[in-house]
Image 1 (cartoon, rainbow, N blue to C red):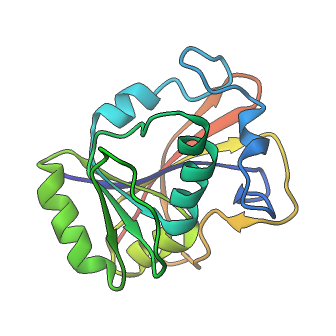
Image 2: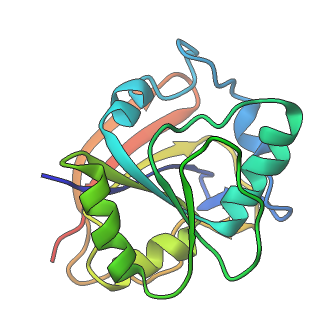
Image 3: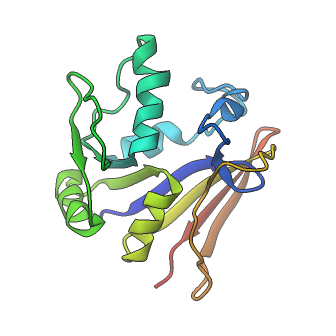
Length: 185
């Protein structure tokens, strides 16, 4: 069964990017496989992903900080980028630019995922739009031992009743706590 998941890292004060939409705060912890400070479950997580959704700011950040520096597109999965502006495609990558209501796009993503999961990569506002329509099943959040004071919020929505159901908590290296929540309906 396809699950729609928000898998992300956040600062202790709830920001996924700093004031400049930068992730430099996160990459101080490393990021290679086997890195003691980074999520060890990422290879298994991404292997279970059949489709990806991301916002235009996340996509632009990847273009500017990975593709422009000679790295290849890391995702073989079809990727839907929600945007109202013109963005450059990555040659050879299965990227689909969309705008508007997330519901019909989610249906397309579910078909494309073919039983695997959907990763709503970010940002928080896009995840909120999926949540508003009851389309998020799970949040997997790595809380880092830093505070940013301001920036892009983890999930700019009020989720009070019913509350999220905590499924698991784990310590990841000296800097992260991994929290896994199920969205109750």
